Image (cartoon, rainbow over all chains, first blue to last red; front, side):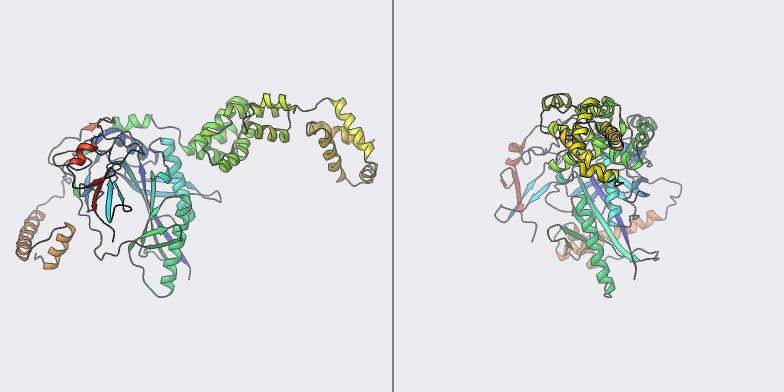
Length: 477
Length: 95
């Protein structure tokens, strides 16, 4: 039997405002428990919500970036449930009239093909507080600092067909929200969280199978693993003649399994109704246009420009444009050396390798764009070879200064004096008569042996093009 | 439309209400009246009307994104039944 996977993702993005969605409390991370929870956040009687304008603008900005219909009238609703970290007894959310309607996101898959994934809606809502179950002698501790933090919940259509596609969609979404500056997207802090609705059906079937919702996935890697393990579980059940139960499941990354989260027989019934404490939010064309003006160049447009302006391959352009910080770094390198191809290579290969290894963001790179540009200049003006440049780069990472200084103090300047190179070539030829015979007898592979010897003699500093030319001339005489 | 004892038990559970038998019967009666009223409202022709969520025809006022609240934890925790290490304590919620 051939199975098809159907996935829809719900992504919660924490909006990068200063204050909460409906109150003037700070949302800064890491504060002492309950020091950022005021009377409204605690749901004391008589307090009323007032909507944060910036959060609304951020939601609209996201909508414009995914080409969505913007709700000119959006309505907040109460989603009712009881939990101690939700003091009001309801979460203020949006049900029938979200701020962002239907849009779409174009994702690039590993084989280079693209797929457009529909976004059903994105609505504004508030986060809940945190419950701490440990160390309180059988009781639960509640921290309401996070209660009321503005979230944008982005709901995709069930158009994702594999775990790999799900990750590609998430990465594109992540890239986009960082470009827009509406969230820091830090998954490890829970500032971007993902729930996955997963079901399987026989290939060719038009009806959807029963789905399970997997919660608690907090990294790109786990999204892929959690979906794959859940798909396996569902197929096993169906192939054994069983039936999938619609339920919420939790992903356990240590055991790499999903398990049922709610044993309750009563299904969630949130009894949504329009929030009477908040009026509908009406926005006009002028408000939307003002936000459209602030849209930055988005990832797809930047990639296209990198291809047109810098003549980069589609792959190179994609790698650089995906991450705003890397894209900006790259452009700063090009500005200081005017060689896009070398800049792209150094940024996406050598620098990236170091950043990955050291596990630091590009903003903390010990080599600034100007330093890397300076290094590339030394390659293009023939001061050093590419090989020596790697040594200089290592030295820059180690904090030995800029390219100019390192080349000077370490004496790495390339030898371009043809007289000096000729002398080295002569010496190598004289010392290796056997190989000279072999070469002259037609064994051309020996040429590399001579080049190696000469480079060794010059400590890598001889200009390779000149070495090749002079060596060829001398050997053929 | 009649409301069953199960319906009442289900709704009471969602609302975390513990009702006596007499209260359950009274609630069932009230619900039936409410539903009858809604049935009556359903008979009105609303095809040409937009759904109304609020009676006031104006937009929600917006607030600038500024932190205006001070830390009042000590004051607020004075009126809480139980606190420890800055946290509000409640009966354990996970079994």
